Length: 245
Image 1 (tube, rainbow, N blue to C red):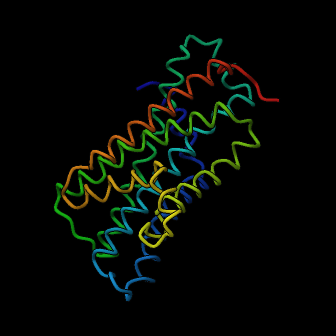
Image 2 (image 1 turned 30 degrees about the vertical axis):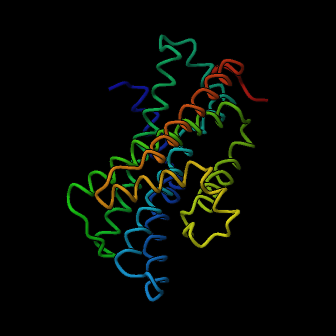
């Protein structure tokens, strides 16, 4: 295992705020939303399962963005410039950031799934649990790419606020907090244009024992490709060794 990978993983993992907002908070929301809407029409096991999937997606999005947008802080501190004088290739630095971002999406996925199962009584077949976590873990690559794009494109002060703003927009308008079916028609169209909507849709399909729809899979692949291409373009214009002023 790469020493740089271990260092970066421990560095992010020691951040208590990161762990609270990406792991504990989505688990608490899972219980809160399920209990609040338990007595409403459509409540019960179906609501508990749908809420669990949405909060798994919410936590994974926050983890992916939080783990990768810190590139802006690394540029400002001179850390990336310091890495440049070591034998570590720049491609390895980027690969480590991607790997760390992907790995750190697993804790919220697993913790929220356990909360859904043992607190809210969500029952899925073993294969459905595995498929649900696997699909959402693979789909989180979209938001890792988005985080890299933001980390390279924004300065330190802007990047800190961007995590909250982008995460909130993706969750609120993507139907992770309130079902899209309750949106006005105009907002439903907006939701369908966001990667968070298709991400949760892929998770719900997996939880139901089905493969993600062609539309969901295609949308996620397209978003990932666009974000990654833009990240590469920005990185070439703003090298990893740049130091923010």
